Length: 577
Image (cartoon, rainbow, N blue to C red; front, side, top):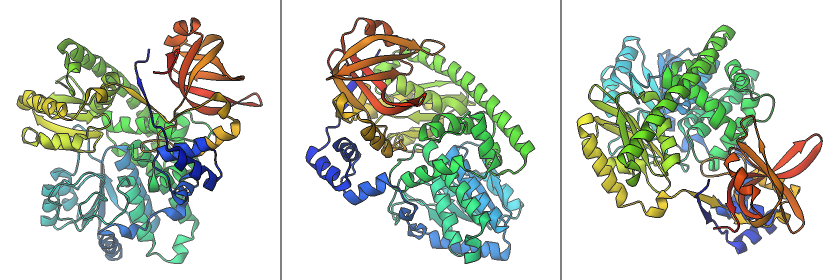
C-alpha cells in the first residue's frame, strides 16, 4: 500500500494560458510543458515537433576539428585505429556507431570492450600495451578516458595518440589526449551537457562525413548507416538515463523509429527476442526490455559480444549471441535476486535504513549486478545506496541516489579513503580497501546528514496537476501523448483527480491476480482505471466509496472501439493528502 507524499508542481497558470493560445493546444498540455521548464513558444514548438535540423553542429565541440583532422589523416595514411568502449549500453552503442562508420568507409578497425569484473571501468594498461604491440596508432575511447591520465600518458609514450569521447565529470587535470570530446570539461564550448557518449560518437561520425564527397553522402549505404547510427544513439541515450530534452529528445524520437526500421540484423534479432512485435517502440521498451538484455552480457559475461551483435552480418553469430544474451539475462536475474534478498536482510538486521545512506558490502556478491541491487535498495528504502563486492582485500561497487544528493560530489568528499571513484549525480562507481569500509561508511553518513532532509528520504510522487475527469477528452489525451518519449528530464505526466466515486466493484486481472481495474465517475463522466501490480488494493477498494487517484491518461483501443483509460500511479482512500 502507498505511503507516498503527493507533491504538486502547480504550473504558472498565466504562462500556461499564454502558451496554450500561442500553440493552439489545451491549457492542460501547456501546463505540462511549463512544468518541464518549457515556457518559450519556439522552444515548445521544437519540443512538440522534434526536427533533425535542430541537432547542434558537431564542430561546436572543443577539439572536434583536431579529432577529425587526425582520424582523416590516419585513414589517408593507413594508420591502424582501435576503439576502446565502456561495457554499458552507452559505450557499446557508441562503439557500434563508429565501427559501422569506418566499415562504410572501407577502413577496417578493431574494438575492445573491457570485462566488468576482470578489468573494471575505464581504459587500462593491459589494453594500451596490447594495442601498441598490434601497431595501433590511434585509440578512440568511448564513454571513458577523461579520468585515465596515467593510461593516456602511457599510450603517448608507446607512440599512440588518443581521441576521447566521454561525458563523465572531468578531474582537475585533463589527460594529454589529441582530442577530448566531453561537454562537461570546464572549458567546454558545446552548449548541451546532457549528450551521452553514443550521441558524441554520432556527432564524430557526422563531423567526419562532412569531409566526404557528395556521392558518398547520397549513397544508399550511407543512408543505411545513418538509420542504424540513429538507432544506436537512441539506445545509448535512453539506457544511460540521459535527460530526454534538447538534442537527446531528437535522438530518442527519431532513434526509436530507426530501431523499428533498423538495417542491423542484430537489432532485428534482438527486437524479436524481446517480443516487441510490429508495434511502435517507446522509451519503456528500450529501458526495460532491450537495455537489460544488452547489459546482462556485460554484467555476467563480456560486453564484447554486445558490439558483435550490433555490427555482425553473420546470422549464425547473431543467433549464438542472442541465445547467450537470453541465458545471461536469466542468470543475471537469479544472481541479482539472491543478492538483493541478502542485502535486505543486512539492512534490516543492522538497522541501516536509519542512516541517510545505505552502505553494504559482502565477499559473496557478484560485482556485475551490484548496481542493479543498489537501485532496488533506493526504491525500497528511498535513500542513496552503495553496494560493494569484496575480493582480495578490495571493495568495488556501485552507488545510486535520490533527487538532491549528488553522488559524484559525495564520493569526492570521501576521496582520501577511496582508491577510485567516478560517475554522475545519480549513479557512480567506486573502490576502496576493505579496511576502510567503516571509515567510508561513517564519512558518507556524516556528509549525507548535513545535506539530506527528512522529507528527502520519504518517497514522493510528483504530480503535474489536479484535474476534473471531464477534461480528459480523447483529443486532449492524444495531445498529451505528443510529450513522449519520456525519461529523465521529461518524466511521464502524472495527473490527479480527487474524491472520485467508485463505480461498481474492482476486478483483479492477470494470471496471478496482481493487476487491478475499476471504474471511477465524476460529474457524469465515467472512466476505467487500471493499476498494474496494484492488486493489493483490491480489498480496501471493495469498501471504498470515494478515492483520490494519480494517473497517466492513455488511449485504449480494443475491438474497434477507442476510449480514454487511466493508468494508475497511486491511490488514496477518500480525499487527497
